[in-house]
Amino acid sequence: CGAAFQDVVSRLRALGMSPGQISDKVRSLRKEHSERSGVSLAYLISEEFSSEMRELSGLDNPTFHDLKQHLFFGEKARGRDTICPRDGLPGCALVDTLPPRHQQQCTHFLS
Image (cartoon, rainbow, N blue to C red; front, side, top):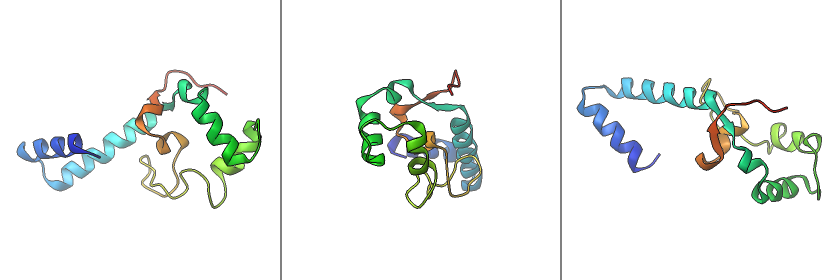
């Protein structure tokens, strides 16, 4: 959360919101953003993603099944220690671990 975030917080304080109200609003907005976000297709088909997955799995052409243990389970699972914006507990969705440039509003579900 950078300068823009701090600017919004300052404006909300100026409007009379208490720190608790601001905290509740931020939590609500983060939850809503997480629920509406999806991993961008541009990221999934990028060399950046392919390279990360090859490094993660140690394989030249990993399948989803090759990656699931590394991405979602075990000590090094992505998001394992990140607080989930949806429920406030440790462990979050893959999309919540990605920088904003790789998150987009979810319009389709691909399986």
